[in-house]
Length: 374
Image (cartoon, rainbow, N blue to C red; front, top):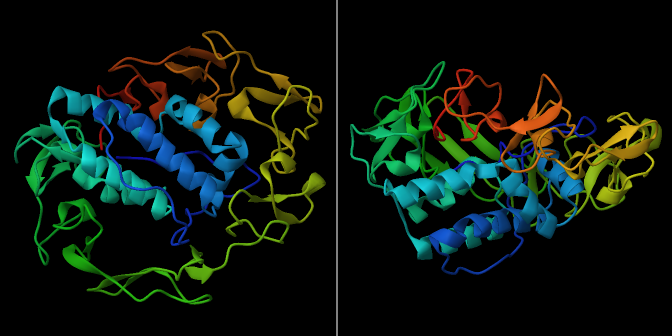
Protein backbone atom coordinates (compact mmCIF):
# COMPACT_ATOMS: atom_id res chain seq x y z
CA UNK A 1 0.00 0.00 0.00
CA UNK A 2 1.66 3.21 -1.13
CA UNK A 3 1.16 6.42 0.73
CA UNK A 4 3.79 8.96 0.11
CA UNK A 5 5.09 9.21 -3.20
CA UNK A 6 2.89 11.70 -1.54
CA UNK A 7 3.43 15.31 -2.47
CA UNK A 8 6.04 16.80 -4.77
CA UNK A 9 8.43 19.43 -3.46
CA UNK A 10 7.89 23.14 -3.82
CA UNK A 11 11.08 24.84 -4.89
CA UNK A 12 11.51 26.79 -1.65
CA UNK A 13 11.84 23.63 0.48
CA UNK A 14 14.06 20.75 -0.65
CA UNK A 15 12.82 17.16 -0.34
CA UNK A 16 13.82 15.25 2.78
CA UNK A 17 12.82 12.07 4.59
CA UNK A 18 9.76 12.11 6.83
CA UNK A 19 10.42 12.43 10.53
CA UNK A 20 10.42 9.41 12.82
CA UNK A 21 10.29 8.39 16.46
CA UNK A 22 8.75 11.57 17.83
CA UNK A 23 6.84 9.75 20.52
CA UNK A 24 3.64 11.67 19.78
CA UNK A 25 0.62 9.69 20.99
CA UNK A 26 -2.42 9.45 18.81
CA UNK A 27 -5.62 7.51 18.46
CA UNK A 28 -6.78 4.19 19.77
CA UNK A 29 -7.39 0.96 17.96
CA UNK A 30 -10.87 0.34 16.65
CA UNK A 31 -12.80 -1.50 13.98
CA UNK A 32 -13.28 -0.05 10.53
CA UNK A 33 -15.26 -1.58 7.68
CA UNK A 34 -14.14 -2.02 4.11
CA UNK A 35 -16.56 0.79 3.19
CA UNK A 36 -14.96 3.18 5.70
CA UNK A 37 -11.32 2.11 5.37
CA UNK A 38 -10.40 4.63 2.69
CA UNK A 39 -11.64 7.63 4.69
CA UNK A 40 -10.12 6.21 7.91
CA UNK A 41 -6.80 5.72 6.13
CA UNK A 42 -6.68 9.32 4.96
CA UNK A 43 -7.72 10.51 8.42
CA UNK A 44 -4.80 8.61 9.99
CA UNK A 45 -2.29 10.10 7.52
CA UNK A 46 -3.62 13.62 8.04
CA UNK A 47 -3.55 13.24 11.82
CA UNK A 48 0.09 12.18 11.60
CA UNK A 49 0.91 14.99 9.21
CA UNK A 50 -0.44 17.71 11.48
CA UNK A 51 0.58 16.39 14.91
CA UNK A 52 4.17 15.25 14.25
CA UNK A 53 7.26 17.35 13.39
CA UNK A 54 7.91 17.15 9.65
CA UNK A 55 10.40 18.14 6.98
CA UNK A 56 10.62 18.10 3.20
CA UNK A 57 7.55 16.90 1.29
CA UNK A 58 5.49 16.47 4.44
CA UNK A 59 6.26 20.00 5.66
CA UNK A 60 5.15 21.33 2.29
CA UNK A 61 1.92 19.36 2.56
CA UNK A 62 1.25 21.10 5.88
CA UNK A 63 1.83 24.48 4.26
CA UNK A 64 -0.46 23.79 1.31
CA UNK A 65 -3.26 21.92 3.08
CA UNK A 66 -3.44 24.16 6.13
CA UNK A 67 -5.20 21.77 8.52
CA UNK A 68 -6.08 18.10 8.98
CA UNK A 69 -9.71 18.54 7.86
CA UNK A 70 -8.65 20.07 4.53
CA UNK A 71 -6.03 17.34 4.17
CA UNK A 72 -8.75 14.67 4.40
CA UNK A 73 -10.68 16.22 1.52
CA UNK A 74 -7.62 16.72 -0.70
CA UNK A 75 -5.81 13.38 -0.41
CA UNK A 76 -8.48 11.42 -2.33
CA UNK A 77 -8.28 14.00 -5.11
CA UNK A 78 -4.51 13.56 -5.27
CA UNK A 79 -4.81 9.77 -5.43
CA UNK A 80 -2.45 9.29 -2.49
CA UNK A 81 -1.88 5.67 -1.54
CA UNK A 82 -4.06 4.16 -4.28
CA UNK A 83 -6.36 3.02 -1.51
CA UNK A 84 -9.36 2.90 -3.81
CA UNK A 85 -7.65 0.17 -5.85
CA UNK A 86 -6.87 -1.81 -2.68
CA UNK A 87 -10.51 -1.63 -1.60
CA UNK A 88 -11.67 -2.59 -5.12
CA UNK A 89 -9.39 -5.66 -5.16
CA UNK A 90 -10.79 -6.65 -1.76
CA UNK A 91 -14.33 -6.40 -3.05
CA UNK A 92 -13.34 -8.49 -6.08
CA UNK A 93 -12.19 -11.27 -3.75
CA UNK A 94 -8.45 -11.43 -4.46
CA UNK A 95 -7.75 -9.86 -1.04
CA UNK A 96 -9.38 -10.58 2.33
CA UNK A 97 -10.04 -7.61 4.62
CA UNK A 98 -9.65 -7.85 8.42
CA UNK A 99 -11.62 -5.01 9.98
CA UNK A 100 -10.15 -5.27 13.47
CA UNK A 101 -6.56 -5.42 12.19
CA UNK A 102 -7.26 -2.43 9.94
CA UNK A 103 -8.38 -0.33 12.90
CA UNK A 104 -5.36 -1.36 14.92
CA UNK A 105 -2.91 -0.64 12.10
CA UNK A 106 -4.25 2.87 11.50
CA UNK A 107 -3.96 3.60 15.22
CA UNK A 108 -0.32 2.50 15.02
CA UNK A 109 0.26 4.75 12.00
CA UNK A 110 -0.85 7.74 14.08
CA UNK A 111 1.10 6.68 17.17
CA UNK A 112 4.35 6.04 15.29
CA UNK A 113 4.13 9.25 13.23
CA UNK A 114 4.46 7.14 10.08
CA UNK A 115 3.96 8.54 6.57
CA UNK A 116 6.48 6.52 4.55
CA UNK A 117 4.74 4.10 2.18
CA UNK A 118 6.84 1.08 3.11
CA UNK A 119 6.36 1.64 6.85
CA UNK A 120 2.60 2.08 6.47
CA UNK A 121 2.42 -1.18 4.49
CA UNK A 122 4.40 -2.97 7.18
CA UNK A 123 2.13 -1.74 9.96
CA UNK A 124 -1.01 -2.64 8.01
CA UNK A 125 0.01 -5.98 6.51
CA UNK A 126 -2.43 -7.95 8.70
CA UNK A 127 -5.38 -5.86 7.53
CA UNK A 128 -5.20 -7.33 4.02
CA UNK A 129 -4.30 -10.93 3.22
CA UNK A 130 -4.16 -12.44 -0.23
CA UNK A 131 -5.98 -15.34 -1.84
CA UNK A 132 -3.78 -15.80 -4.94
CA UNK A 133 -1.64 -18.95 -4.71
CA UNK A 134 2.05 -19.19 -5.56
CA UNK A 135 2.35 -19.16 -9.35
CA UNK A 136 -0.82 -17.12 -9.82
CA UNK A 137 -1.03 -13.65 -11.36
CA UNK A 138 -1.06 -10.55 -9.15
CA UNK A 139 -1.04 -6.79 -9.54
CA UNK A 140 -0.10 -5.90 -5.95
CA UNK A 141 1.59 -7.53 -2.96
CA UNK A 142 -1.57 -7.84 -0.87
CA UNK A 143 -3.11 -10.29 -3.36
CA UNK A 144 -0.60 -13.09 -2.72
CA UNK A 145 -1.21 -15.69 -0.01
CA UNK A 146 0.72 -15.45 3.26
CA UNK A 147 4.38 -16.35 2.67
CA UNK A 148 4.36 -15.13 -0.92
CA UNK A 149 5.10 -11.85 -2.71
CA UNK A 150 4.15 -10.33 -6.06
CA UNK A 151 7.15 -10.43 -8.42
CA UNK A 152 7.07 -7.69 -11.06
CA UNK A 153 10.71 -8.13 -12.02
CA UNK A 154 13.61 -6.19 -10.58
CA UNK A 155 14.84 -4.09 -13.49
CA UNK A 156 13.47 -1.92 -16.27
CA UNK A 157 9.73 -1.89 -16.92
CA UNK A 158 7.80 -3.89 -14.34
CA UNK A 159 5.80 -6.91 -15.41
CA UNK A 160 2.14 -6.15 -14.71
CA UNK A 161 0.49 -8.39 -13.80
CA UNK A 162 3.28 -10.10 -11.91
CA UNK A 163 3.52 -13.56 -10.40
CA UNK A 164 3.09 -14.66 -6.77
CA UNK A 165 6.29 -16.35 -5.58
CA UNK A 166 7.32 -17.96 -2.30
CA UNK A 167 9.44 -15.73 -0.07
CA UNK A 168 13.11 -16.66 0.36
CA UNK A 169 14.38 -17.78 3.78
CA UNK A 170 17.18 -15.93 5.57
CA UNK A 171 20.48 -16.71 3.85
CA UNK A 172 18.84 -17.38 0.51
CA UNK A 173 19.56 -15.55 -2.73
CA UNK A 174 17.52 -12.42 -3.48
CA UNK A 175 17.40 -9.22 -5.49
CA UNK A 176 14.64 -7.36 -3.60
CA UNK A 177 13.78 -6.88 0.09
CA UNK A 178 10.19 -8.00 -0.44
CA UNK A 179 11.36 -11.38 -1.70
CA UNK A 180 12.70 -12.27 1.76
CA UNK A 181 10.80 -13.87 4.64
CA UNK A 182 10.24 -10.87 6.89
CA UNK A 183 10.74 -8.40 4.09
CA UNK A 184 7.09 -7.39 4.31
CA UNK A 185 7.47 -6.35 7.96
CA UNK A 186 10.91 -4.74 7.78
CA UNK A 187 12.41 -7.66 9.73
CA UNK A 188 14.59 -8.71 6.79
CA UNK A 189 16.37 -7.09 3.87
CA UNK A 190 18.19 -8.18 0.72
CA UNK A 191 21.84 -7.36 1.39
CA UNK A 192 24.70 -8.50 -0.80
CA UNK A 193 22.20 -10.62 -2.80
CA UNK A 194 21.27 -12.56 0.37
CA UNK A 195 18.31 -12.28 2.73
CA UNK A 196 19.48 -11.11 6.15
CA UNK A 197 17.63 -10.19 9.34
CA UNK A 198 17.31 -6.51 10.27
CA UNK A 199 18.22 -5.98 13.91
CA UNK A 200 16.88 -3.07 15.98
CA UNK A 201 19.53 -1.25 17.97
CA UNK A 202 19.14 0.76 21.16
CA UNK A 203 17.47 4.16 20.83
CA UNK A 204 20.07 6.82 20.07
CA UNK A 205 20.45 10.04 22.05
CA UNK A 206 20.62 13.56 20.63
CA UNK A 207 23.60 13.97 18.29
CA UNK A 208 24.11 10.24 17.83
CA UNK A 209 23.78 8.34 14.50
CA UNK A 210 20.40 6.89 13.52
CA UNK A 211 18.71 5.12 10.64
CA UNK A 212 19.96 2.03 8.80
CA UNK A 213 23.49 0.83 9.52
CA UNK A 214 24.87 -1.91 7.27
CA UNK A 215 27.95 -4.05 6.94
CA UNK A 216 28.61 -6.66 4.28
CA UNK A 217 26.47 -9.19 6.17
CA UNK A 218 24.37 -7.32 8.78
CA UNK A 219 21.71 -4.62 8.86
CA UNK A 220 20.67 -2.69 11.96
CA UNK A 221 17.97 -0.05 12.34
CA UNK A 222 18.84 2.53 14.98
CA UNK A 223 15.84 4.57 16.19
CA UNK A 224 16.00 7.88 18.03
CA UNK A 225 14.94 8.38 21.62
CA UNK A 226 11.51 9.85 22.32
CA UNK A 227 11.20 13.50 21.34
CA UNK A 228 13.95 13.30 18.72
CA UNK A 229 13.88 12.86 14.95
CA UNK A 230 16.32 11.13 12.63
CA UNK A 231 17.50 14.04 10.53
CA UNK A 232 20.37 13.50 8.10
CA UNK A 233 21.30 10.21 9.84
CA UNK A 234 21.66 12.05 13.18
CA UNK A 235 19.15 12.27 16.05
CA UNK A 236 18.10 15.88 16.57
CA UNK A 237 15.43 17.89 18.34
CA UNK A 238 12.94 19.61 16.03
CA UNK A 239 13.67 23.31 15.55
CA UNK A 240 11.22 25.46 17.49
CA UNK A 241 8.91 27.93 15.74
CA UNK A 242 10.88 31.04 14.84
CA UNK A 243 14.22 29.24 15.05
CA UNK A 244 16.83 29.39 12.30
CA UNK A 245 16.85 26.30 10.05
CA UNK A 246 18.38 24.83 6.93
CA UNK A 247 16.69 23.02 4.04
CA UNK A 248 16.74 19.60 5.68
CA UNK A 249 15.93 20.58 9.28
CA UNK A 250 12.78 19.20 10.88
CA UNK A 251 10.66 22.01 12.27
CA UNK A 252 8.24 21.81 15.18
CA UNK A 253 4.80 20.40 14.40
CA UNK A 254 2.70 22.85 12.40
CA UNK A 255 5.66 24.80 11.00
CA UNK A 256 8.08 24.46 8.08
CA UNK A 257 11.53 25.73 7.14
CA UNK A 258 11.22 28.50 4.57
CA UNK A 259 13.10 31.63 3.49
CA UNK A 260 11.81 35.06 4.38
CA UNK A 261 10.80 37.74 1.91
CA UNK A 262 13.29 38.37 -0.91
CA UNK A 263 15.20 35.22 -0.02
CA UNK A 264 16.00 36.19 3.58
CA UNK A 265 17.39 33.61 6.03
CA UNK A 266 15.30 30.50 6.63
CA UNK A 267 13.31 30.06 9.83
CA UNK A 268 10.61 27.66 11.04
CA UNK A 269 7.37 29.53 10.36
CA UNK A 270 3.63 28.94 10.22
CA UNK A 271 2.21 28.10 6.77
CA UNK A 272 0.39 31.43 6.61
CA UNK A 273 3.74 33.21 6.47
CA UNK A 274 4.68 31.67 3.14
CA UNK A 275 1.47 30.51 1.42
CA UNK A 276 -1.38 32.75 0.30
CA UNK A 277 -4.85 31.21 0.21
CA UNK A 278 -7.10 33.93 -1.24
CA UNK A 279 -7.48 35.70 -4.57
CA UNK A 280 -5.68 39.05 -4.41
CA UNK A 281 -3.14 38.01 -1.81
CA UNK A 282 0.33 39.46 -2.36
CA UNK A 283 2.83 37.00 -3.87
CA UNK A 284 6.38 37.12 -5.16
CA UNK A 285 6.01 35.13 -8.36
CA UNK A 286 9.24 33.38 -7.40
CA UNK A 287 8.85 29.98 -5.63
CA UNK A 288 12.31 30.44 -4.11
CA UNK A 289 11.21 33.64 -2.34
CA UNK A 290 7.74 33.29 -0.80
CA UNK A 291 4.97 34.13 -0.30
CA UNK A 292 3.54 31.88 -2.99
CA UNK A 293 -0.03 31.21 -4.06
CA UNK A 294 -1.50 27.85 -3.04
CA UNK A 295 -1.83 25.63 -6.15
CA UNK A 296 -4.13 23.19 -4.33
CA UNK A 297 -6.60 26.05 -3.98
CA UNK A 298 -6.20 26.66 -7.72
CA UNK A 299 -4.30 29.91 -7.27
CA UNK A 300 -1.34 31.28 -9.24
CA UNK A 301 0.73 34.44 -8.96
CA UNK A 302 -0.06 37.02 -11.66
CA UNK A 303 1.60 40.44 -11.50
CA UNK A 304 2.27 40.16 -7.76
CA UNK A 305 -1.21 39.01 -6.74
CA UNK A 306 -2.88 35.60 -6.44
CA UNK A 307 -5.37 34.88 -9.22
CA UNK A 308 -7.78 31.98 -9.74
CA UNK A 309 -7.01 29.24 -12.28
CA UNK A 310 -10.68 28.24 -12.42
CA UNK A 311 -12.90 25.65 -10.76
CA UNK A 312 -11.06 22.46 -11.78
CA UNK A 313 -13.65 21.26 -14.31
CA UNK A 314 -12.89 20.04 -17.84
CA UNK A 315 -11.27 22.91 -19.73
CA UNK A 316 -10.21 24.85 -16.62
CA UNK A 317 -6.63 26.13 -16.60
CA UNK A 318 -3.91 24.23 -14.75
CA UNK A 319 -0.13 24.14 -14.62
CA UNK A 320 1.44 20.90 -15.89
CA UNK A 321 4.34 19.58 -13.87
CA UNK A 322 4.49 17.42 -10.78
CA UNK A 323 1.77 15.21 -9.32
CA UNK A 324 0.84 17.79 -6.72
CA UNK A 325 -0.34 20.15 -9.42
CA UNK A 326 -2.56 17.41 -10.81
CA UNK A 327 -4.64 18.18 -7.70
CA UNK A 328 -5.66 21.47 -9.30
CA UNK A 329 -8.17 19.50 -11.38
CA UNK A 330 -11.26 17.80 -9.97
CA UNK A 331 -11.39 14.09 -9.13
CA UNK A 332 -11.24 12.02 -12.31
CA UNK A 333 -9.39 14.71 -14.26
CA UNK A 334 -5.71 15.32 -15.06
CA UNK A 335 -3.66 18.35 -16.02
CA UNK A 336 -2.98 17.96 -19.74
CA UNK A 337 0.59 18.93 -20.61
CA UNK A 338 -0.26 19.96 -24.17
CA UNK A 339 -3.12 22.35 -23.41
CA UNK A 340 -2.49 23.24 -19.73
CA UNK A 341 -6.15 22.47 -19.07
CA UNK A 342 -8.01 19.91 -16.98
CA UNK A 343 -9.00 16.90 -19.08
CA UNK A 344 -10.44 13.41 -18.36
CA UNK A 345 -7.96 10.84 -17.06
CA UNK A 346 -6.70 8.27 -19.54
CA UNK A 347 -8.06 4.74 -19.92
CA UNK A 348 -6.09 1.49 -19.81
CA UNK A 349 -3.54 1.24 -22.65
CA UNK A 350 -3.42 4.94 -23.48
CA UNK A 351 -0.09 6.82 -23.59
CA UNK A 352 0.85 8.55 -20.32
CA UNK A 353 3.76 10.31 -18.64
CA UNK A 354 2.88 10.07 -14.93
CA UNK A 355 0.62 8.06 -12.65
CA UNK A 356 -1.88 10.88 -12.19
CA UNK A 357 -2.64 10.81 -15.93
CA UNK A 358 -4.41 7.45 -15.62
CA UNK A 359 -7.80 6.33 -14.32
CA UNK A 360 -5.96 3.57 -12.47
CA UNK A 361 -3.33 5.99 -11.11
CA UNK A 362 -0.66 3.71 -12.63
CA UNK A 363 1.52 4.65 -15.61
CA UNK A 364 4.14 2.05 -16.52
CA UNK A 365 6.24 1.95 -19.69
CA UNK A 366 4.45 5.12 -20.87
CA UNK A 367 1.08 3.30 -20.89
CA UNK A 368 -1.81 3.34 -18.43
CA UNK A 369 -2.27 0.05 -16.62
CA UNK A 370 -5.63 -1.42 -15.66
CA UNK A 371 -4.68 -1.65 -11.97
CA UNK A 372 -2.10 -0.45 -9.51
CA UNK A 373 1.18 -2.32 -10.01
CA UNK A 374 2.83 -2.63 -6.61
